[in-house]
Amino acid sequence: DGGITQSPKYLFRKEGQNVTLSCEQNLNHDAMYWYRQDPGQGLRLIYYSHIVNDFQKGDIAEGYSVSREKKESFPLTVTSAQKNPTAFYLCASSIGQKAFNEQYFGPGTRLTVT
Amino acid sequence: SQQGEEDPQALSIQEGENATMNCSYKTSINNLQWYRQNSGRGLVHLILIRSNEREKHSGRLRVTLDTSKKSSSLLITASRAADTASYFCATDSGAGSYQLTFGKGTKLSVIP
Image (cartoon, rainbow over all chains, first blue to last red; front, side, top):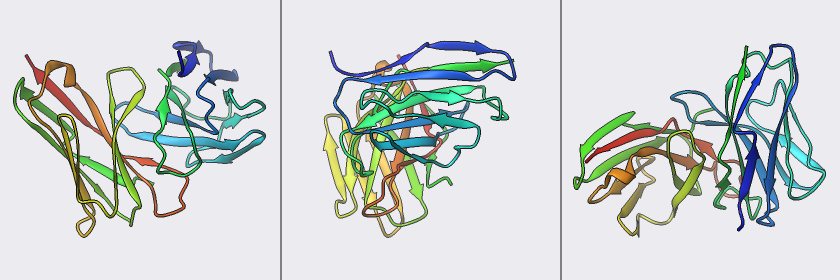
């Protein structure tokens, strides 16, 4: 049963705390992505990775960090420097690096910071 | 930067009717994709249309692309209550690009 898993589904944190969101895929995809979605908005790209041990900033990388130590895993850390972290976070993967490849999405993690 | 913009923002139709949503974009593209998102879930890829294609079909879905007007439309025929979801267009920024840029989406409600 292949796919992308994100955990947890809901996450609550106090302001000032760092929090790490998990994303795992068993599709053997090279590329992985993190997006943020706010209510009534489209997806905005935070970070992406095309290969292990390499990743690139997206449009809104400030206050976030990632790692890609394994092909299957691409965790996202929301740091205390992120001014407005409450959002729905979506992880995705694709078989290749280019934008014409279909992206497969996980179920998302809803983060609430109070 | 927002590349694709969907129109309308929300659409409510009766089951069995057709639903049409539009996407406009600003810069030249190589491909345009449409995705669907059920409430509170991840996105699911529906269809990809290349810049040299004008129309593409997949089941009850029909996508058109007009590169001269920088616009695309998604038509869902004979809609069902299960089609209720948000629909997003996603564009690249030309050949060789690595990123997709998503619009804000059209929220479709199909009333049984």
